[in-house]
Image (cartoon, rainbow, N blue to C red):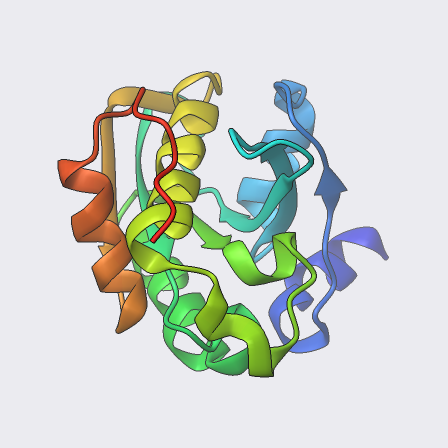
Length: 171
């Protein structure tokens, strides 16, 4: 029953949830075999914030490359037809992926998404996602990439040029 539910997880929006830290090998194997994606929580460098995202693990359980996906201003909930299909395509090619949702992490309503700056806050969230993924046993730490759509692309470019240890800038 669990396997059937997990296999249809994309259609039913069923999530397997676990938080920061390494998941046991059998949980990762189950996810790779059955689930389309799982909700994960990981530390943020912003005080008082825990970041959330959707993790898709490919069938190659260990030492796999990962692509961090940065949504546009709509977030995962607004245009899931872009981010989630890319996560599935990447999985089919042997990549894990993590869709980072800066908006859900901050309980931001749709009308306030524009207030979360892609050049500072969202770029830092991508760097925090990279740090989280680099510590996971199923990830090849030197093979973490980024893609983004719309303002998510802006966040990607800002993360690339930002010093990982730079303090947040307010604009």
